[in-house]
Image (tube, rainbow, N blue to C red; front, side):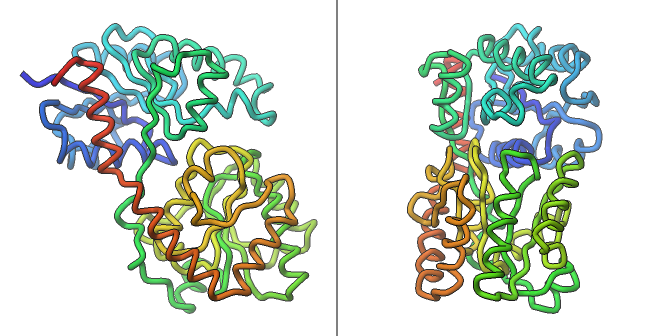
Length: 368
């Protein structure tokens, strides 16, 4: 009789949502000898049922006491529970795998002294890391951080990188200029940032570098920022006004997964300015679409991009300015980065990631 593995799939937005959804989609093709089940919210049940036959609805918000009780109850009969975040149920009594993408809440000055970190993130991360039979993370950088900060042994942590969706590829058709204006509210050419606006994303440094590029070269480029954060957006908008670039920076809270590859393909440069990242999916997605990438020389980003991107010190916006200018001024460099990026992205796939997860499940369950 097949062993059952239950995935807590109640979080299907953002990076964790991309990770969870893609694993579930791949498991339907490759989970030989295991029965994959999912715990979902009602609003996601129909979409998850397309690739997961057994679905249990637990309509409970993330980060509260009730989820601790209800997820533990919903998973009580499974052979293994995999929770793709650190909010795993501490009352669960069967084998448990937890994915910890990063420990930014405990290491970044912007968050580590917050009340929510002291009340929830720090105690939960420590408790879950010790309770889990095994921890999955997405980069060697994150693994080393988890070892240092949470004090668990390297033997209990497996690095399984994220993949890049098949929709992100070098065949992605760029938006026509008229479409860019109509759909995005921005004119070509443009630079692109994809991600939220939290402090560790270092968006103000990007804004300062962008303003300097426009002053130095009198370029007509705009900047498109896809991502939102109600708490941090006002300060980012204020910085745009201070720099005098508010008329050439466009914010889009989100776009469809169908449209996003075309936006990547339409951008002249994608910039990832973070001071810390557990992985950095936008870097991989941009490279797969053949768009040159400039990334911070920090945390996991060089691990993901390899020699297929240009790098800068995240504390020095002038370095970012210089790297963006290098790309915009050289067709040869643009072509080189495009070709290198496409090849680098081919090293990452969700199929490979899923197969590595399945192998780990079998190891924990002692299944051949």
